[in-house]
Image 1 (tube, helix red, strand yellow):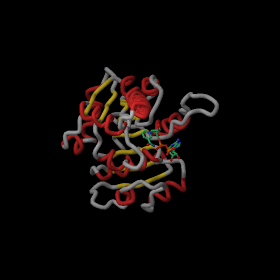
Image 2: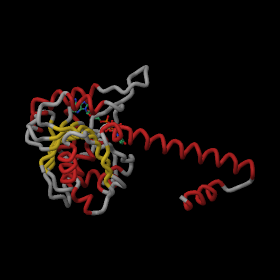
Image 3: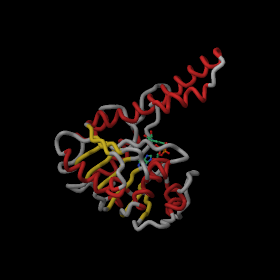
Length: 243
Ligand SMILES: NC(=O)c1ccc[n+]([C@@H]2O[C@H](COP(=O)([O-])OP(=O)(O)OC[C@H]3O[C@@H](n4cnc5c(N)ncnc54)[C@H](O)[C@@H]3O)[C@@H](O)[C@H]2O)c1
């Protein structure tokens, strides 16, 4: 399948290379010309175990190229949005400028029947708003990413779950398209959860909050152990085993 990936930072560079590894014909688009040049030469712009090998195409049947021109995504059937969504300076609000700009550059090149798939972490409601601005015949799904830095390649090629957020209208076709993209992962029995758009947007935020809650809980348990003379690591281990 022809796939484009918009935003080739941590998430996007790994995703683009992993999609090629899964056999897709991939073009990665980024506004940073130096980053595109490095990736095109097979150089990872940051250290991530396994990424250089993926960029070199070792063992992967798919094609992989990079460009600064969104027009080069025109032939793709699936367009992944992987740009940054940092917090705005001085407020806790997510800055969606990269997302808006990437979609504006892509919009003239979207063919009817192609789909846009958001992977960036966004505030709930963003996907429905972006979907409303797409041309007729172009669907939008949200497919949040749960990768961990330092394990990004492994987490992308062997995820512990795939989440597809789709709208009620046209959802089945979007699920089928994503199933085709991830066919090799699904064949390995990776669990796949289909939700509405809002739930998929919240999935990443909820996962981060759950991780923070677990860390806070482990710290509280450690304090109790220190006061009571218990072994915090052993105690947390007994809980993890029970769960
Ligand atoms: N880094 C992680 O571990 C991780 C994990 C899960 C989810 N995410 C989410 O993934 C998203 C991307 O994160 P990241 O760490 O890869 O960010 P990043 O800042 O490393 O990369 C963003 C890339 O997008 C490019 N870009 C900016 N504007 C663009 C445009 N208009 N068109 C094309 N490319 C453009 C930038 O040049 C940059 O290369 C964020 O929403 C983040 O929350 C990140």
